[in-house]
Image (cartoon, rainbow, N blue to C red; front, side, top):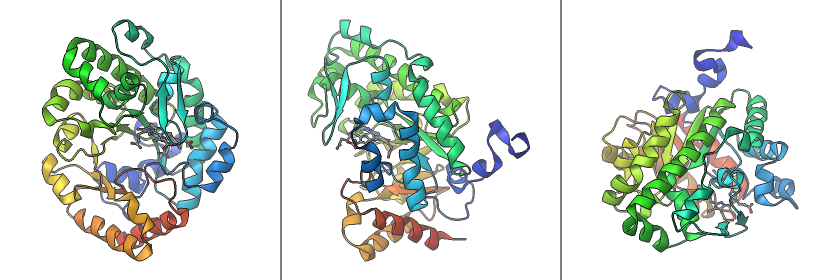
Length: 354
Ligand code: CP3
């Protein structure tokens, strides 16, 4: 419907949503809320939809990915949907042998350790992720005025799975390559950056109104290592989507010492984990940008009164920011009571109603 469109072909209701307004640092009607890992995990209707379907298979079934993306929007009344997928989906689409093991995470059959192993990381052709584009289109059509956030794994976090072969606490193989074979590392980072950039652009072209780059495990790095060995690749991902004009969110865990660098990599909005209060996070990035975060996910197990007290603190910390998107400091934990999340959304909305 062309009469209802404004800039970049975005429908007016969407462009005017509190979530996108907050991303642009504009005044909002009330503070927008969404939760990382809101799709799946804690929802019984998710477990029902997924019954008998392996995680990665569900990501490549547009009807299923759409339904699961919509579930938390219907249930909680959040201000944005996050697309149901996974950071390893583009790697799977390239034909890399991998699986997502319940309770474990992504496991890569043959880890990437040598130059010859790089041959498997060919550029991602958009046609390889056609079911993802289809799922995004279906989801956006169903969502109406609620924005959809697309996402990708950042080069370091994806590299950590590829090089370790699975989740890790120490990243010893990843760091051994980073320090011991810097040329190989740089080539690996460039290839992953190219893949992540195509994956994001596919989602944007199909209608995603914002994107988040997850560098979940970047907190394992010193600022110097991050700046020299990781930031250039993440920056190239952000630059590759800059022309679309969609807001770009950058998030990692344990990244208190990296916030300024992660902001400089090209984020329009910086995601903050629960360890750094939002006012302090804003000082660390030099101010001027909207922030997303940062209620400790475990607070949701402590009862409504505690949830409200901690949520109120997050809102107070955010009071002086140019924009705030309320979120958790990391993802929703699997045992979270979904109703506690619904009540939290209502509380943030009620507290911030202008
Ligand atoms: O946020 C959402 O609700 C959208 C969907 C989403 C998933 N993964 C679905 C998923 C998103 C945004 C991700 C991103 C992701 N995947 C990240 C970055 C975000 C973060 O949490 O830091 C990372 C590091 C991964 C890799 C991955 N995939 C992990 C660590 C796990 C969890 C393993 C476990 O079960 O504890 C997965 C599996 C996964 N991804 C599930 C879901 C819903 C669970 C699958 C299941 O239901 O069995």
